[in-house]
Image (cartoon, rainbow over all chains, first blue to last red; front, top):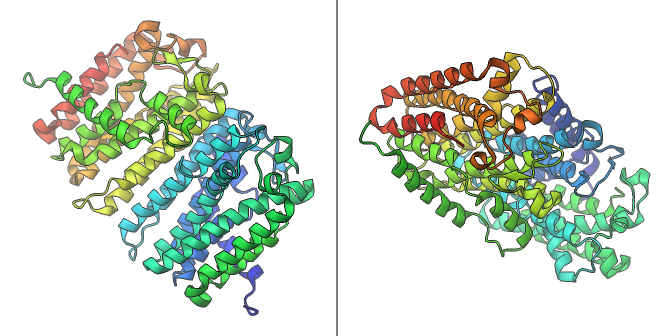
Length: 298
Length: 298
């Protein structure tokens, strides 16, 4: 793996994703401009683009070309962004800052923030449905829409968020915490890897390997997120550090301690890498991303 | 047309839609129950089911079977319902009652209401994507997803809602009012008829006729809605009548007067019926629905 340069890999793909996002989002001056500005404000706030990069890495791991999955990769970023906008609302987590900038509703007001989130979710499905080219089986597109909808709905992201909110201020069981973690963040991360592979025509065995890696990776990501919230500072996270504690959120470190959390995250990263072995060198980027997810400081 | 019984037609199809909605929505006790209860609370509040019935009528007008389009028909109802839940939120129209019952956020709280809306929108796309059967071209499914996303997004429903909110308390031009009306409600009504026809394999000419009828019908629906708000009473509308006036919403009667509004709606209904003539007797239900839209009291 020594010849693989993750930084170059990530930068190249992030650039592709950013260019595509700029192209597929409605222009700021297209009517009605308010909601288009609000959509771009949050999407273009400069996130890690982890989910779209995982879509691309999932595609490349089974021999596909990045260009082929860019609209769907961007769709995953739009869904992630919509969830942040809605989570930050006063009625939800009530956050004023995100990625070091004012949250969407602080800039555009609550009504526009709600609608911008709705519009991003809606636009995501338009992008996925439009990701048909001559080589694709349209049946795969329908499967990918269903996969993303499942991961983003009450069996996935929304379900995790509901239980997360309901658990605030309560002592939750390890079981409930796993429920929240596997859904709130992990479901969409797993789906990102999977749909990339599906669009590239992955064989069942390869898709199974990718799925197992995605599951481990997604859970590791959320545990590391919890750890960073405990350890982080305002500069590093771009949001008020310790906000999970302030809101008495159910977190892995709160329930199992920091050391056990680090061990569990590390184990999950190793699990992901073991699952990827059958895919050979094409899966190297995913393995490197797994290490990055563990080591990241924000 | 004298032998066509609209009441029986609508009742039969509404029963089919209600049964399918009950089957495709997650059960109330499935985890997390809160959001599933909130979703069912609003979906099962007993609306007219106009959009799903239009999907079925669009399908039947070009020779398709209702059973074939039921998941997509229900998806349109879920999208309509999500838009009502979000529109009723305190940050938006701030309504306490809808269809004679407390609005979603009054019963479940704002956070769950936002998430229930998000979940309904997400689930809608899952239903459309799953509406594949042996006879369907999966490519049509991808087209239908894109069509619905376009009608529900910033080019359609969300766009109309944004401008509607921004126009509150202002004197709007006839042009702006048309912008709001063709998007806020008409886009989804037009899409309902169209996707029904698309799923049934409509030929280009038939789809063009359906599209023209859908456009006229959708606009007529919104103008009649405006008229009913002026005329209506609490019993008839199930929400506080005159709420458009109270909120200083841009409406057709406010700008053009009641008489001109009625004439315009009547003309649009006639336009829709003329557009449907080439489709012959199979389009009779749509024509009857057009009359119903004009004559309805709620």
